[in-house]
Length: 248
Image 1 (tube, helix red, strand yellow):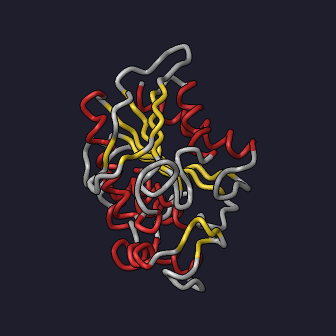
Image 2 (cartoon, one colour):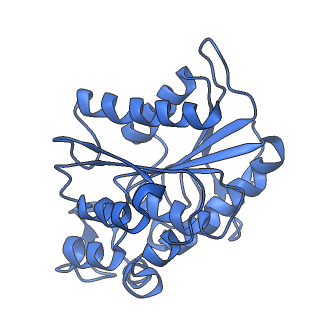
Image 3 (tube, one colour):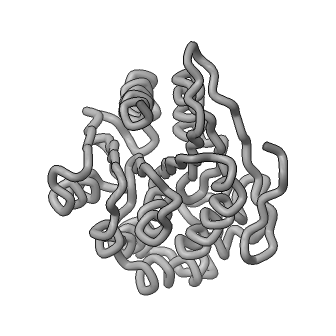
């Protein structure tokens, strides 16, 4: 696949498509991967998860949301709500070619997936990695001492904190729990117990809300990005094994 993907704002989205390999390529499936705030399609947890899925036989498409990486757009406008529309544009571009589509989101990208999957039947399986649920609490905890439109995220000058982003987190979205209640497709949540960016309680809340409906894996000692090699291996294997069971 090499056709441009353009979001509703007319911005081209950068993506990488990789065909599934391994001993038994899995026909008919595409796994779309979306990153978290300040990330892009090359974020290690995204790239390594895609590689594990490729080895398991899945086709993958890792996308950089508008304003991130090499995608067009302004980072300051990269809100959850806008990225839900970005994901819709990706689904528009690929859904005719695949019978089944899974979406994997990390952090804020997971919130994007919940909101999209709650309204879009083209997503047939959902995976949240360190998924953000209480977006208002995240904004207040991580950026409560930063002035929007003046300060930056986590002291990174390349990532200005916009009022549009904060308003979307706190007022427009606030919490994705109502959307989570509408999810009816298979859902896997993976979270590190040592995550201090998006706290494990967000996944614990979904586990309680969905009870036996959602599958949950906690990776002991893992941080927000599953950065230690053994933690990442645990997370990526859990994802690949779970999705292979759904595709069989």
